[in-house]
Structure formats: C-alpha cells, structure tokens
Image 1 (spheres, rainbow, N blue to C red):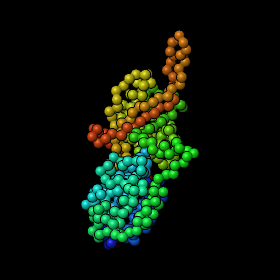
Image 2: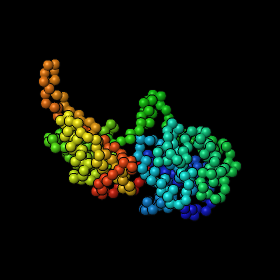
Image 3: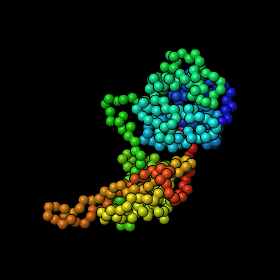
Image 4: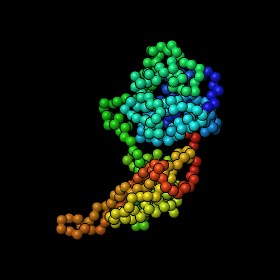
Length: 350
C-alpha cells in the first residue's frame, strides 16, 4: 500500500449517497480526536473535474483504514463492498483495517462477516475509538508510528461517540412506530411490476409494450438501475428492460414467455433455469439473476355462481416478475449482456 501522507492517519469513509451527512459527522468526529487523523469522504472531498475513479483508487491506496457506514440492509451495497474489496486488494491491508459501523440491532453484510464490526452504541463504539487513539496499530496494521493520542481524555472519546450515535441511529417516533419497523425490512430479490391493462395481444408472452409500474410496492429505482434505466424519462416498458438485459433472443426471455403462456392457461411449468446478467450502476461488475414469474392479476371470471359452469379466464391486468439473485456457485453460463448507456459520476456511494 502506498502511504505517503507523512504522520497523518488516513481514513477512507465509504458510504451511500443518502448517508452523506452521516459520513460528514463521522469525519468531523474522528478528526476532532486528533489533528493527525484525516478522513476522506467521497463526494465532498473529490476535486472538481477530477477522474473520480482514479482519485478513489489513489485515496484507498494511501489510507490506513476504511470505515464502511452500513445503515440499511435493504439497500444495495455493491459499490461500498467494491471499495472495501479494492482497499484490501491494493496492498497488504489486513482485515482489521476494514471497519463496518452498523446499527445496534443490525448485522454485518455477509461479504464482511469476517471483518471488524462496530455497532453504533456506547460501549462498543467507545471501545473502538479508544483503541484507535491509544492502540492504533491494533486496528490498522499498516500504521507504524505508535499511538495517535496515547493520553486522549475519556470525555473526548465519549463526546465523539455520542455525536456519531445521534447521527447514525434514527430517532424512534412514538407517533409512527411502523415507520421504524419498515426500515428493518430486507428484500433479497428484485420485483418488476408490469401493467397489461392497455395491451391487446398477450397470448405469445409478456408483451413488450407493457408499462413498468414504478413506486412503493412496485418497481423501485434500484431495480431499474440494474438495467441502467433508473434515470431519464418515466413510463419505461418491458421492451426497454428486455433490450437493456440482452435482447429479445435471450434464453431467459424465451423461458419466461413460455412460463407466462402456461400460467395464462393455469398450467404448471418447471422452475426457471436460464439466467440474465445485469450490471451495477457504474457498470463495474455483473451479477446473475433468474427471472421468475411471480403473480398475474386478472379480471374476475363470469358465470361463477352456484351451479354454473366456469366462464372464460379473466383478462390479465398486471404481472409481477421477480429477479432472484444467483450465487457464484450456482451460475452456469449466462448470456453476455449488451452494453448500455454510461451513468454519471457517483456522489459518494449510491
């Protein structure tokens, strides 16, 4: 690891864009413990007009520690995990040098289970800050200049701890307890909801002109980001997603269409085996998913009264497709996706 920062202890604060204010609080709290501590927060500390990817790699290479702010498990943490993996791969940084600061009731993301986790609560956080100041070499193996603040006052540790906790842990609002519970929900799969209400021909498969239903309980911006379609115009169609995910001739789409037709006739079908590979927001790495037909909403049937014969099947109005992530060991030979439009420069971690 190239660390040419003199006697300054360099900390890289990895965070999502929504947590930028929290990252700023952590930066100020750590730098307040010692003038020898310098924190880098992506977004606020990037030079205007700079090559952000190159500067991030340079900052990681100079850092003695990476602190990942893991706030909500239901979000996408691919970029932050990428930064953590890049940090350890750039040199000889040990696992101890990656610290995952998380909510007291939460757990570490699975890729970081073997790393140092610090809960945002008084005892654990004070212990970490005290060790950072008094036994710096224990939490950053690349640091060779002794303790940062061997005689740091305990009140200073407690004040920094309290500031971070107040910024990290959301206030519990008695008037709206369900809001706090909602924050703890984890969605392991992606959901695509398509409106078929205005589509005339549906018999051959999921129609390309079906409109993507966006918003809470439907298709999220994060799911659209897998197709590089989270920005720009609204009213995306299924055809837009198909084109971004590999085109109309892909094996996964043919299988999904067969399942859709079978479901329209209330017939059983085999589990999905074909996979689609989708990019992360910055097109740095891909992950495989199985497109699974989850639900079809139909109009009510006619002639279902007592003693009557079943009428024709109701017209499909809406279809829900689940994108189930596939682990590396389960992947076979997914098709190579077509490249899509580039996205903008990240402000922190999105």
